[in-house]
Length: 70
Image (cartoon, rainbow, N blue to C red; front, side):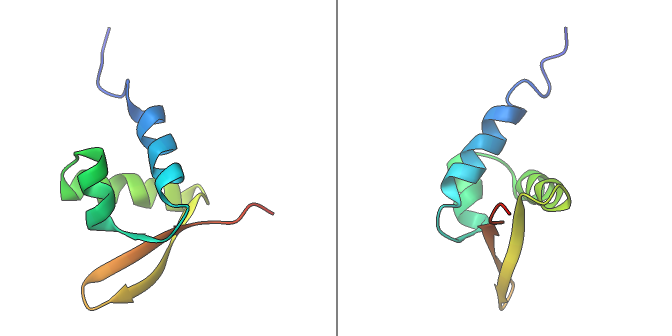
């Protein structure tokens, strides 16, 4: 049995919990112990599902936040 995505639901839950306040991609990357590209891939996938959004960009840093449920 493949173990590749066994931690995906846990990572997604951790990201949503961490985004109680807006955070940078770097902060999330350090919490998840993931590579920069892996963190960005996860955030973009969650963004396409409507769970998070890129709130603002300062220089080359993007600030991410949770999408408020309707």
